[in-house]
Image (cartoon, rainbow over all chains, first blue to last red; front, side, top):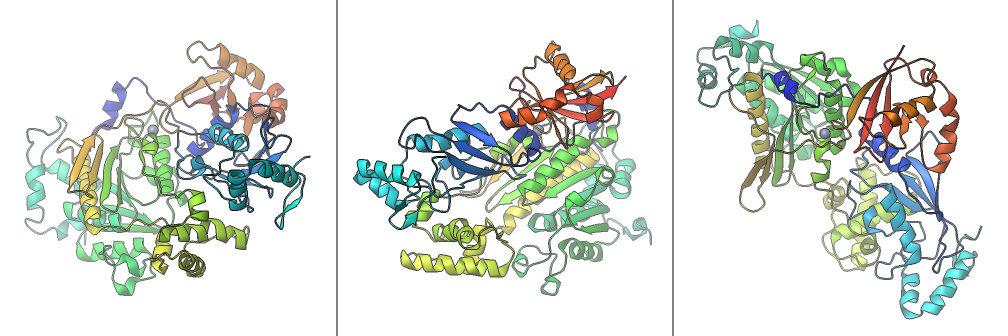
Length: 177
Length: 424
Ligand SMILES: [Zn+2]
């Protein structure tokens, strides 16, 4: 059998026995404790011992969604960061990039996810959707068309939806709390 | 009958050409002759993880090169679709555990070889189990399982015990592409070090799936990503349940019809949701051969082994490339530092943090601490900081047992630092 041990002795960094903490777990600890969020974003852990499931509340201080308070759920699985966190909007909101089921169209949550990205990048990406809703990647087609056709009307729909009005037969949730 | 008596004359004639005399490139530690033959055939114990496409090839190769004490783990049962390439299985075996059928087949076919199967998960086994082997070969299709065995073998390395370092040979294939690599835990780059090199599963932009489907795959993803949760709520989709696949297939087919897209079939639906890339028998054969060659070279020291990554790309001609993947300092499994720390049983968490910050050699700022099962103190986010703040005034000894481990993360560390705590 090959003598690997002798090669090891030559290594300057002689590793000591490492802890049982899983790589995903350490990575989540690192991501969370190094979060650098503006005042407009807050995390909440229903069970503070469970780091893998939490919510993020975004309260934009600028743009068309100013004044609203938008809540997203985050679910991280043990294959993180090979797989991205699963993120959903927990409210029914009027937004071109969020559908009525809470699915979010944000490239880094799916096709452009890479393990070098972290929770901070996802959160900043989500906030950006409220500052710059993007009609090119629609999930709520009506909202996207309105944004392209008539920005003023779109804005008024946004304001009404945020107060819990019904738009085109869809009951939106009041997010002004 | 003992295994040796079943060896007929010239059984290993060709293999012995390599083992009976050193060559120009053999390792200086290579002892040609009976000793190495005896080690390979009587003493060496090898574990094969996975008895699927790669695993069948690996088991056959090992048995025929003279490994005689082989163990195999697989949690799957045989499906009819496996039979085209997993050649240890026959139609009568469908539904039976792969590990058990493969073991029986090899033992019947290659006299004198003992294959010990385990039908279950690698996670069922503990360090003592893995410690009994000289070598581990993986032929898995799951990233998660590979990460687990890699971390387990890296964590098992005990600086006091040379036997605790188990070479891991990892094979993987995806269609016409494949790779074989040799991982010497804590010495060379590990599986986690190269996690960002993996091909990620194809994911289509969610808005394309929702609005502008053009491919049958878009319709299937629409059914599984958007329709399933909308209709079934929190009920989890089970990609192994044919009824679930049928439901998805029906939804996808209806949508494909609406958008005049052709090509949605039941098996494509299953392939997309299970993220199956068609397995190619010849790719498996090449990668398994490479893995077994490495196992043979490492077990016998008869030739230089792979350092450390072999890549095969068979999509355009046959291209292969070998390179040394570098170990990463910020690897969460094999990188980072480990530190033994001896503190008084009266030391509080706050005092421990002070000690860490004052340590000149590690230069740590704002450390966050946890044990494998609980948080000790988190600098952020605010809610967790508040929840863990009461721990600051507690004694470390109330939270961490003697010889217990603390994981420290900080922006100033490449990844993490592990502390092993002893009390004075
Ligand atoms: Zn590593």
